[in-house]
Length: 312
Image (cartoon, rainbow, N blue to C red; front, side, top):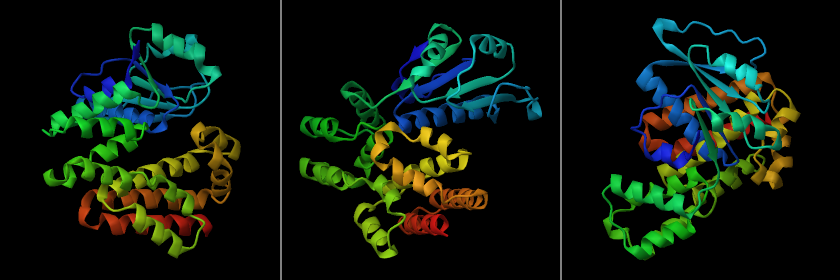
């Protein structure tokens, strides 16, 4: 059964009760958002234990602790036969498959479209209608009234990638009633248009250049969160890829211009540095959650530490 990812995000009170969830598409930030939502919802409401699966060739369903169920995460470009999927239906637990679009997975996706106990969730950049739904939902939840002119400025000019669209509209509440004007919103969008995610590509520059770019582009906690989300995504690609070939295939298509740079960064990492990278991500995430007042400082410290690990 095919499901709109935006409907899942906007109806978070709806119970999830499928056996299979297949998250696909080419919009990485939306895929990750949907994955996190489904995983956290199942963990919170139905006490699932999360297990990552590398291959189903010799799959053994381990018994979950304390009477919980298992939630299996399978992230791979390798498809699974319909026979194997039917066998998995008889296993206890729930399965989430995550794979970017490619020609090879067309028949694989058809299984989930036809199966009543499955959700196929195709994630692409937000179109105009999806932006309207997300923005209206945000305004309703936060009890915010916008002038029509401001509303349509946001719809037309904000990023079509979900996480960046969401991060910007989350700032509306922070600017204050007096600044919710055409001028105030245009200034907000202007600040957001610098592309904070591009700071990841400053890792090989001098520290003073990194600091200068950071101070120009990161001016709020939301900016720090956006930057950390983006860097964490690419860091996990490095950690989870065993070979350069595997890593290269995982780089999103829209970053084809930066692919050579990303591969160059990957080649600098060995097992020891990957452990250091995971520790840095974990430590920074804890700090950002607990100490909001120091988020700007923490974001810069994270970026410089990331550079130090990379070039060491």
